[in-house]
Image 1 (cartoon, rainbow, N blue to C red):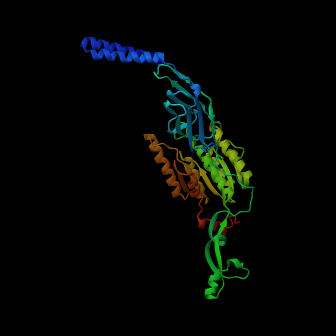
Image 2 (spheres, rainbow, N blue to C red):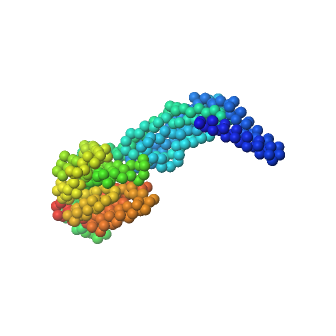
Image 3 (tube, rainbow, N blue to C red):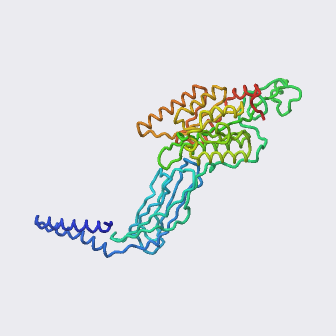
Length: 441
């Protein structure tokens, strides 16, 4: 039965009910009321649906492309370009199946006079990939709502959304631009931040002499600055099946979020002169123990190679490697491949125990270790609350073992997370430099 048939049938039943009630109760007012639904049916049957061709639809998606997890604003506008009013306009946007609506609604309805428009605003959660929007479903009704016409009009403006890991990452300059790193040590040297003063030695640059001190006391002293060093960082992406969890339908997986964080971290580090390497755990790679391994390097070529590994990690189904790839062995092998002075940054949701064991083993081997963990655990159920507690416990145990844990909670800007994750303790850097294990620019 169609909507119109249900509407007419309901009106007739209502009219009959009022008629019988009026006859048996002897109340003329109920007999008059019985005419109301009949008038409604008559007007509806005589009215016709407006022409939907008078309506134009435009869509704006901001931003596109966008990285995984980023809120994306969608604005759908329906405008009446005709000369007649339309009493009832209803629209439902064609949201792609793979994307989740996180705010607002893709539905809207109102009446439109000539020149007026209906605007529907809602938000999506970005995922990696290309998503094509279906044409919206547009329904118009006549004055009596008895006749309706539904169309799928062509849309002006944006019709697709693209999610990319490097959507917000600026390009990296040519390899090895000669710039020093941003990591400071406790040792004095060349730099910009004041460290200390010492007695002048023959050959010290005139620009580093403390002339104010000389004017006061007559003795020459030389100003020392915080020495800046380059670092070697190995980004370890946990691409195993347990890590491909999501916070909800249509939302990015933890591997996508980790790959996005790795892309931004790599771009920032390379742009300031540091060396970056990449390892992917959980997939079958060409290196020993099945690792996908990119030795540390610098420049735009290194960035392109690393980005291809991150893309591969998001696209590859880890089930194909299960049974003959041992992630624990891959993590042990990483200690042999990574340079001794390299900092190891593990990007993992910490859903199970293996990432914790790997990070604590690296720390016990004398490595500087950071865990950057995107939080994708929902707490709306008892099981989710238990998973949340276990994850927080793993991060706490990592901290006690000397690992720096960074909990990337939903809503926290990634730039803040990266700054926390790759802040380097000055004393550790100085000790490594003194031992000859760290590079100094």
